[in-house]
Amino acid sequence: MDAGPVRILFVCLGNICRSPTAEAVFRALAAREAPELNVAIDSAGTADYHLGSAPDARAQEAGRRRGYDMSARRARMIEPGDFERFELILAMDRSNWAALRRAAPRSARARVRLFLEYAPEAGVLEVPDPYYGGPNGFEEVLDLVEAASRGLLRHLREQARAG
View 1 (tube, helix red, strand yellow):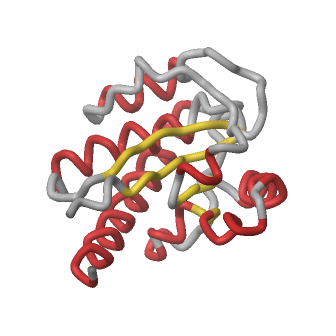
View 2 (view 1 turned 180 degrees about the horizontal axis):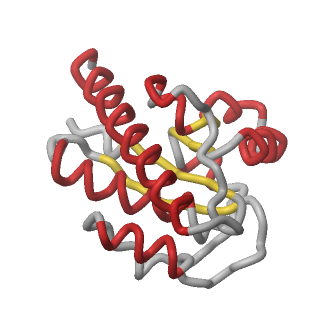
């Protein structure tokens, strides 16, 4: 009997750069490289700065150049119910990780992780915020997110095999 999808939530500050990028990249890589995995993916922000906004145009353009589409995404803020709905809540940096841990009920705190824990080869634990930087920042975000997405896919495959 199918236990249902593994629900994963990617979280950054405003939900217009890093987390929608992570959502789009992971969705595409999971479909292409691990179609056997049953996953449900979403993204959110810890702040309400951009509620209802499309992802940053620079993030969309950088993603589009690599074949990722995030144009339909609209920014939302983390909700209390997210801590129960999602098995993994993956923060892009320590600041958002700390905000999520403070907001999470005690029973859900272990679900809050740093996304780059799944890319130890990257040598960093935080996806830098490209919002105020130059265009290369969005490329760096994509590089890190692709590495962490592949690491997360490996992790999920290993979990599925372990049953």
